[in-house]
Image (cartoon, rainbow, N blue to C red; front, side, top):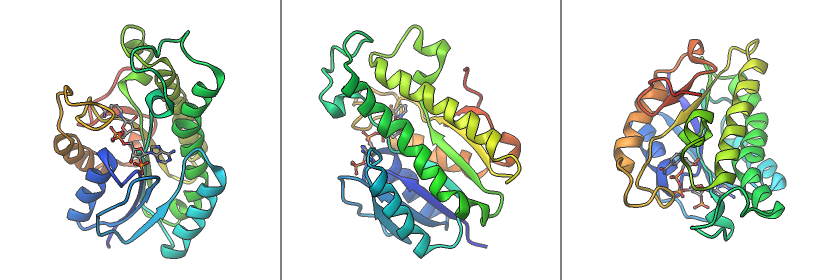
Length: 231
Ligand SMILES: NC(=O)c1ccc[n+]([C@@H]2O[C@H](COP(=O)([O-])OP(=O)(O)OC[C@H]3O[C@@H](n4cnc5c(N)ncnc54)[C@H](OP(=O)(O)O)[C@@H]3O)[C@@H](O)[C@H]2O)c1
């Protein structure tokens, strides 16, 4: 039977390429954009701002009108402090004010939490359903202790990891798995041109890795290639 996936951030970057990869694999692909247009041929497209709970609720209601189930949710969209005017060279822990930190947390943590909550009934109706939260190596305590210029981003991805662990525990009875995934350092608008991985390389690996996940993987923090990432 054709499998169904909903991904956030399909207008550009990793979300767009992962969505295209699932289309190519024959999945029914639903996606969301925020500010970017989407040029992909998807089964459904909604618009939402992850910092705006009302827009998430409206978009998720629209999604539920177009599909009665999902087998996979990928929370891919995310930002760092530059999106909200953070100085590219001054994003250390003492450079944040409350508004800047909260803006990053709203998009990277609160938004995925609300999207996951709203899609739960669709995932419960799916088969061997999984949730993949696109995290970062910078959400790792071990890694971020020594690298990562943007403290707010590191905090947000660590929080997303904890949200994922708690969601995995809450969904055991539903047999819905939850995995955190570091996509690699990738040549997107966020990753920049110096990144070692192209969007195609990362997205191709992520499609293969996520399509093969099972409930036994729930709670893992993995890299794009499916290997374990340190916490
Ligand atoms: N690139 C890397 O090296 C790297 C490394 C580790 C982790 N990641 C993670 O990978 C994911 C994808 O990143 P990327 O590299 O593809 O970034 P990107 O090219 O900068 O794209 C960001 C995506 O997030 C969406 N977005 C931004 N603000 C949003 C909002 N308020 N509401 C909803 N969507 C919003 C954008 O949609 P619109 O354009 O429609 O606004 C866009 O699709 C992120 O979670 C990021 O943290 C990336």
